[in-house]
Image (cartoon, rainbow, N blue to C red):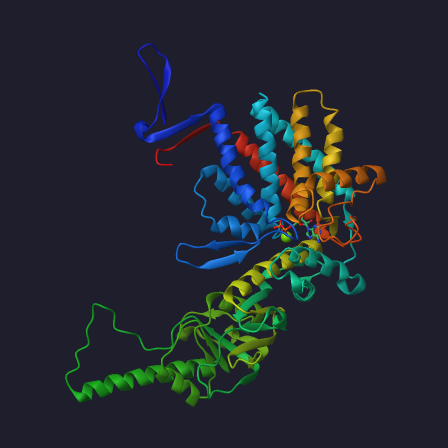
Length: 535
Ligand code: ADP
Ligand code: MG
C-alpha cells in the first residue's frame, strides 16, 4: 500500500493488486469481524461446564479426536478467517499461561462481542465501547480479588487441591474418575514442587499414554517411565546403581555416503571390510564400558550385529529413546547428552538408583522405569484407556488438572465456580456503571451483561432455564450478600458453590476476563480489512 498525490495535490492510496483485493471499511468491517469471531465462540458455548458437550473433530487425514478442551477444539477447527483466528490465539494463550479455562475465555469474548454489536447498532463509537469495556474490566478484576479466598494447601491431606483438580476434571470425558485422577495429579505436582520457592517445573512430570486397560488403571510412577525395553531380550532386566551413558549417535560403522562406491572384487577385501566393521563396534562398546557406564541409552538404533556385541560384552542398552525422553533423563540423572563416542568421559554419565523393566496389567508389553535419579525427582503419570481417543483426552484433562494445582502452589487464592464469580463481578460492574456519566456507561453496563452470559451458558448447558436460574442466583447474591451463589449444575440442592466445593483459581479467572477484554478491544480497533479476493 502506498500514498500518492494526483494532479491537484490530493492524496490517494494505491493498493497493490487492487483488482484482486477485497476491501471492507468502517461499520461493515467491524460487523463482519465481530460476526466471524462470534461464530467461533458460539461453537464452544455448548462445551462449557460440567455438563458441556464434547466435540468430535475429524482431521483431513481421518484422525478422530473427541474432546471437551476449548484450546484443542479451536486448534483442530482449522479456522481461516483472520479475526476468528484471534479467538484461537486467545484460547491458546490462556492454555499456555494458565492451562485451564480455555473454553470459558472464548465464550466470554463471544458474549462481549455480542454486546459490542448491539452497541454499534445504537451508534456508539467503537473507541467508546473499548474504553467502557476497559474500565469495567478493571472494576471486575478488583472485585474478583476482593472476593477471593485463600486456601490452605497442606490442610487435610491436600483436600483443597484435590477439590480444585476435581473441578477442572469434572467437565471432561473422564469425569467419572475425577477423584482418582485428581489425586494422582496432586501427588505428581507435589512430588516435583519446590514449595519454598512456590515453583513447579512441569517438565519433570512426564505423561505417558498407553492404550489398553481402562482409565482406572491410570497410575503414578515415581521415576521416569519410558515405553521401551532392553534392546536384546537376553540382557539383564534390572541395572542397579545405574551409570547411564546417554548417546545421540548411532551404534554403527560409518556408512558410505551416496556419492562414494566401494568396489569389492575378491573375498579377501570383503573379509577385511567385515573385520573393520567388527572392530568399529568393538571399539565403540569399549569406549562406553571404559567410562564406567553400565547401561547405554541411545537416541538412535543399532543393528542386530551391534546388539549381539552389546549382549556379549554385558552392556545393557536401549535404542530409539525419544528426544524428549533424552532431555528429561539428562535433567533428572545429571547425564550429559553425548553426540560422539570419542567424547564419552566418566563425568558425563548420569546416575540413577535403578533401571528396570516392568510389566503393566495383563499385557506382556514391557516398559522401563528409571528410579531414584540423582539430580531431581521426576515422576510419570501412566495413562491407560480403552482407545487412543480416550487416552488422548485423558492426557489433556490431566494436563488441565496439573496446571490448576501448579497455579495454586504459585498463588493459593481461589474464587468459586459455577458462574458465581462472574455474577458477583457483573453486579459490581453494574453498580459502577451508574457512576459513569459519559456515553461509556452503556458499554460498562453491557460488560456486566456479558459476564452474566457465563452463568447463563452454564445453566443452559445443563438443561436448566437460564433466565430464571440466573435471575434467582442474582437476587440471592444481592439479598444474602453472598458472592458464592452460582448455578447448581449437578442439581445437588444447593447453589452455594462453597458447599459444592467448586474451586477455581483466582489467576485463571483474572486471566480469562483480562484476555477476553483485550482481544475484543483489538477486534474493535480494526476498521479496514484488505484481503485477497478469494477470501
Ligand atoms: P474450561 O475449558 O473453560 O475450563 P470447562 O468445560 O472446564 O471449561 O468449564 C468450566 C466452567 O464450569 C467454570 O465456569 C466452572 O465454574 C464451571 N463448573 C465446573 N464444575 C462445575 C460444577 N460441578 N457445578 C457448577 N459449575 C461448574
Ligand atoms: Mg476446565
